[in-house]
Image (cartoon, rainbow, N blue to C red; front, side):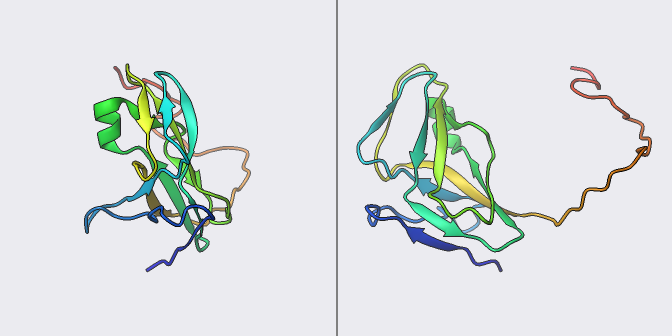
Length: 147
């Protein structure tokens, strides 16, 4: 079990901390901590505050991901998805939303705007070498296996 500390920021005492909507959900829903409704025009992107800061233990990251319902019904999604929050970040959690839909979309205070999924991060050490081992794929990149 990992424990993550969360702190509501001043003026956001009414904003719910991240919450799982079902027992087996992977993500914790994040709520908009906007002071007044924010209208996202088609093609527009905005940074939406979530009203809290947190402290995670080393070895964890939080990933910010879109909510499927907002994406499907309204074309509202997150840019830089998944967005990574590092264990040493202590500032306010914010969500970078974009309106890919055809209509303006209003974001209201308390509205669920994204989800946050916690992942473990392995400890990795980079080693510089002169040569890499060969594989069948080799340097084949984007689209190298067909359509």
